[in-house]
Length: 177
Ligand SMILES: Nc1ncnc2c1ncn2[C@@H]1O[C@H](COP(=O)(O)OP(=O)(O)OP(=O)(O)O)[C@@H](O)[C@H]1O
Ligand SMILES: [Mg+2]
Image 1 (cartoon, helix red, strand yellow):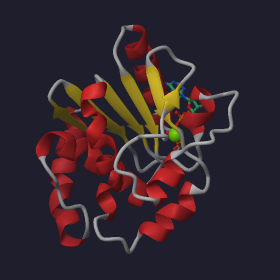
Image 2: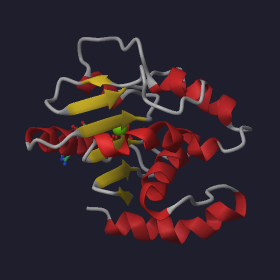
Image 3: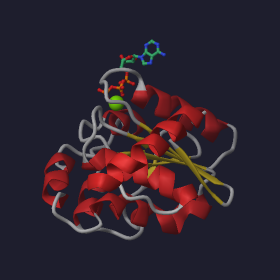
Image 4: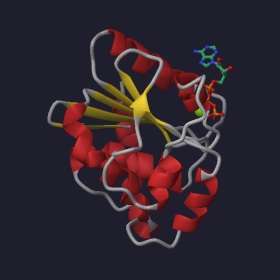
């Protein structure tokens, strides 16, 4: 799933199936892009925190998407940190994100929380990669919304709007490279 914003590219790596290489894909793309001198942000939206554990192996993150999502942060101030990979910043995740996502289900605009958090930083990165949990829940719709809306304007991803958006989501996934 990709979207463009000026020279920026936002990619969410999502799949209904678990264990198919989503996190590995994000880590490899991020690591190589960072080595090539690109400014990269890797966002872990999976409460399992697999990407976080690889990117920040020695740290228990004191900051994370969990708290930022809970307070509906509108920037990454105090949320991102440098990773072990050159040129790659990471937004870590924790298991508690699971509970926060459940809490957020009734929120108006719940699909746009991550997009609103990332938007002020689009011009700071050449590539923003978003790792997703398997399946589809609010953490995944936030990731897909950020990737799509970064280039195509806001899309409705709830109720009938989600059904209408699905062909676009599928098309965008096929175009992802
Ligand atoms: N291209 C590949 N070839 C062989 N093995 C791979 C490949 N990509 C990933 N793996 C292995 O597959 C396993 C699952 O990979 P990964 O954790 O990236 O999947 P995932 O889709 O993120 O899983 P989850 O749905 O649990 O988040 C890991 O052991 C990883 O080393
Ligand atoms: Mg994973």
